[in-house]
Image (cartoon, rainbow, N blue to C red):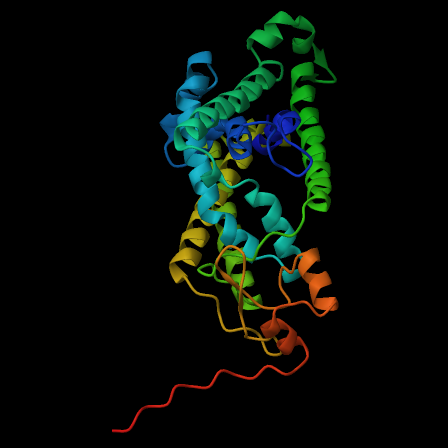
Length: 331
């Protein structure tokens, strides 16, 4: 697959319409597991010898060993960047997207039981990846079992059409699933208090950082490829697209880590924009939110019927006052 993200389409049957996993499976492990076997190819952007380890990650033994460990690392990365990435979205989308990506709370499950289902989910995701690749790459058991996949049509083997066509179809399915999942998801609670919500300038800086890392990864990987093979080796764009994708993915990972960790270290939201109330109310998760943000349908109905908390009702009706500053006592 030239687009590793497309492998997530294979685990969609294991997910409900709202993005949570069926039964005790772990959604993030299913999805990350479907990426895991290819991660060694992205790592080769910095460590060229890592390419050879792909033979292990695409093997039955690798599925239940290396791929599970790689999945755990990917999920750890996801949990690091999840809230900072959601904070980049416009306020009107933030609550619903956050409700989708948070899913079910892990803390509700016993750690040992959760670990077992995490490993199984990761292995299932990796299995879908390896099986899919077997029918879209040369000299795999799938292409050997179906000789027609190796036949050349219009200058390209059939398995290559399956590889790129499958990628395009998979990405379309993922977009459709995400759109339906967002519609089926109620807005979640506000972001944790320690996650800064950047202003317009901050969003531009984040986009520049992440985009710059992606471009740097592509340039590094393609130039290294050309230095080894020579530019005249490129007969069609298909010769270099996988290399560019691996470089882009490696750069994206670096950019996300830099932005996500930087945002968490920053640790506090910037001052609200002009015209935005600064009063914050406690939410169900123990964080803070402004009265306009992330109100659930039940809270909205309560407000309309006059049953909202007194602080919010007063705020919305213009009767709220600023808290008085504490005055120093007599000297």
